[in-house]
Image (cartoon, rainbow, N blue to C red; front, side):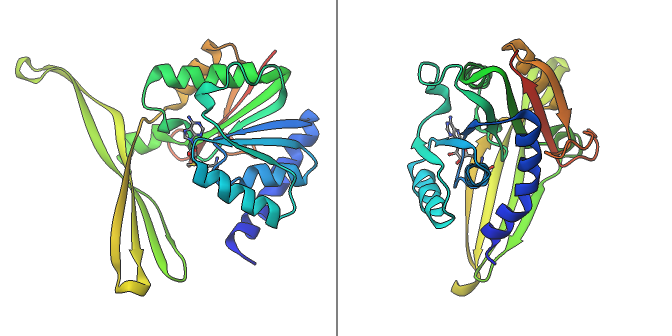
Length: 248
Ligand SMILES: C[S@@+](CC[C@H](N)C(=O)[O-])C[C@H]1O[C@@H](n2cnc3c(N)ncnc32)[C@H](O)[C@@H]1O
């Protein structure tokens, strides 16, 4: 069984529960990447549209969708541009896999959340999953994960980029962690352990900020959990922040 098949199998149960509880018929997977969640939901009978900024990701998603006999539809689309395209259309919008921290300013984050709200029907549900930056920033956790395949090793890690607010010379200043550098070190075992690093800047979002912004754009009953199974969120120990927010 491939790694992708294993992920699809293990995550299916979680989504089954969500679909059943909320009677989900139509879903938007915003920032779908290679489309794993779209495929899972489609195979559970949900009408799914997966969108991603990257054409490469969409091509891969279409390829996998065919392989797994899913009916999900995919489109190369920026979720910051969906205001006039999707309106009161979906029962569920998901934005998973730590996608939102890739938005580098507050205006874009609010625009994305507004577009998700706009895309939902009344009574619809938004699920957002990001890493637990409350914990990562507090502990300055540098290593995210290390993964090894037959030929490669992937080490994902952060560089902390301090933003100094105020005047250090006057000794009135604050050091903030407004941005992090997210690095993926890829080591090729088959080529004498040659390596390359891919670096992206991200803007971490803490749990309190996520809740506040979801409420600001009109979501109600915003709840934060530690995972999709709704285990409690513990700021000091949870790996993820998962928000469930409703459009009323
Ligand atoms: C970390 S991946 C997560 C993929 C998938 N949701 C998952 O959980 O596996 C983030 C994805 O979001 C996409 N993305 C980032 N900003 C976007 C935007 N403004 N509109 C659409 N997709 C976006 C990226 O291209 C990337 O494929």
